[in-house]
Image 1: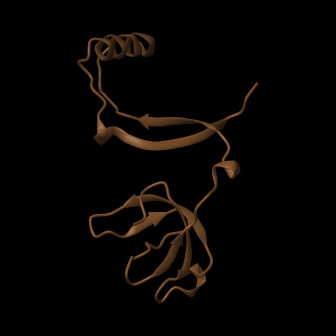
Image 2 (image 1 turned 90 degrees about the vertical axis):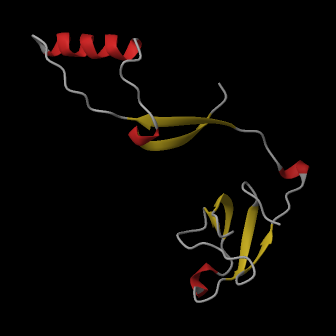
Length: 117
């Protein structure tokens, strides 16, 4: 059974011959059991599509540091005498947790490899 994080090779995807031979990492398995990953826009459907999990030997594996940056954004309205006063008021409200950024404020997630110094 494939799981999130597994690397797979697509042998055959029904109706999508351009995916034959593509490899990628499973990043999500939806509620219907379809596999979504880095091979492209179509989901792999176990039982309908043919794929295999690529086993990587420990000797082939390297260690990487990956930085995850998640961006949340919210616009608030504040009355102030100047732009700097407006920012100061919003900073104070945010610090006091009067302004909360939650999953509804989600914009993007970026992943970067941290290079050793």
